[in-house]
Each structure stands twice: as structure tokens, then as C-alpha cells.
Length: 259
Image 1 (cartoon, one colour):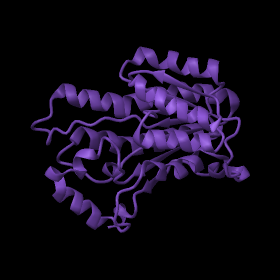
Image 2 (spheres, helix red, strand yellow):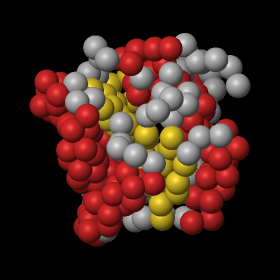
Image 3 (tube, one colour):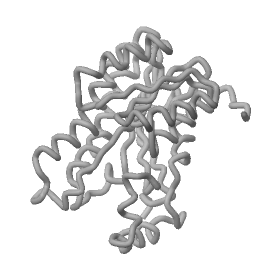
């Protein structure tokens, strides 16, 4: 394992990554572990949880996988308590878990689908951050990292609930950053561009080839990103190197947002 520079070293820190069993969340979880953090992964799919847990253990850091549906609010506090009992006080919270309703627009989207996306992508972020911040206060330090999207900045006629939630994440990040800064807790967001994950797989298939071509044409890097390419920014925001950075949203998008 390469030696991590001291300001980026997460040894002794405990991180929680929601949706950490696949895609961007898995990339971030492994990246934090490579930097020395103990990592807890929250995810609904127990098979995927066990798969990433074995990868974390292979890195050699303390780790735990918690099977949880973040829309079940009563389960949130017990899940965080389990992490603290098994790994220690939570220093880093990465609110990554996400879902999408490819409804085609507000005229087609069912209210229950809207509610489910908002509950997962926004309400759970608020509730988990509130709980984790209370724990961080006792140690006078902490890092909360929210995962936004290009749709935090651009609208989408196809997935309005997702766009609404991701836009709100930027404002929630700013608000929490202001409130928690006096307690030495930094709150920032990452806005990934088009990353190859299970969620974005439909866009890369033949029926949506035109959208895929438009994405590649707009992205100066000329390609889709990989989940592990988001991890470096997450490690920075989780580390002492970012102690004077708060309330910002960092695009990791191959230049997509430039144009």
C-alpha cells in the first residue's frame, strides 16, 4: 500500500458511507479505507454488502456492513449506534445512497415515486447528518460529505424528483456548513458527472444511444468516469487537508459542467 501524506491520512477515523455497496459509494468506501479509515457501509442488498465488506477487510481496516433501508426512519439511529459500538465514534459521514424514478416528467411521475426519491435522496441525508453531527460535536471535529449530481445544477425533464433532490442537496450542504462550522465540522458536497454505475447503465445502452453521444460530446474528457475516480475528492474532503473548506460543491465530471 502506498504511504498516504499525513494531511490526507485517515488512520484512526471512522467513516459511514450510505449506498456504499456499489457504484460511486463502493468506490468512495474503498478509497477511504485505502487512506486508513475504518469504514461502515450502509446498503439494502446483503449480498452486495458482504462483497464490499470482504474487499474492505482485504485492505486491512476495521469494517462493518449494515443492511438498512434508509427510508425506514426508525432504523437510522440504531444503525449509527451499531457503528459506534463496533468501530467507534463517527468522524466522517458520506451521504451517497440514491435512487431514481425514470418517469419521463411530472405529468407521468406517480406521487409515491416522488416521495420515495425525496425520502432517500434528501430526507435521509438530513436525518443521518443530524444524528451524526450530534456525535461529532462531542469530539469537536467531523466531516459530512453529500453526493450531489450534475442535476444539482441542470434541470431534467425526465427525472424531476431526482433533480429536485440533488438541487436541494447543494442548499442543505451550505446551510449545514454555516451551522456546524463553529464546532469544527466541515460539510461539503461532490457533484459527480456521468459515472459508469448500475444506475446510469440504461443511458449507455442502445435505446438511449443519442443521449450517450450527447454526454460524450459535451464532456471534454471524452469519456464516462469510473466510480473510483470520485474517491480522491472524497478522501480530500474527509481529511485534515480540507479543514478550511466548507459549504462548497466540487464537480468531478471530466469538465461536463464547464460548457
